[in-house]
Image (cartoon, rainbow, N blue to C red; front, side, top):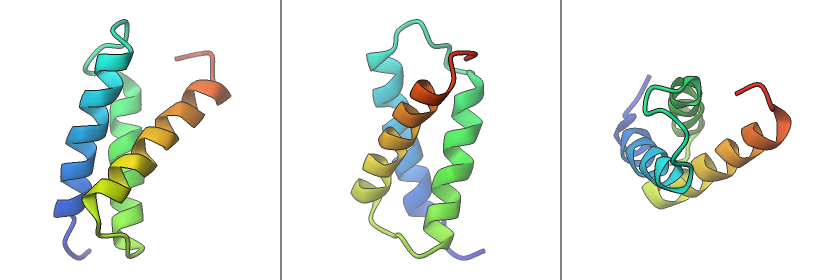
Length: 71
């Protein structure tokens, strides 16, 4: 499993930014867990820069919004 600390930092940042941009989204929204899993997978795959992971996380959330109108 390796060190997932960069993923945690990125998760906190990306989720905070996302919530700020989308005030109607609950802090406990299902996207929260999805984002956390996504960032951990990216970290395990070798990405270790928290800034890059944050950017990837925000892009991932945007794609989720575009792909699903059921959230």
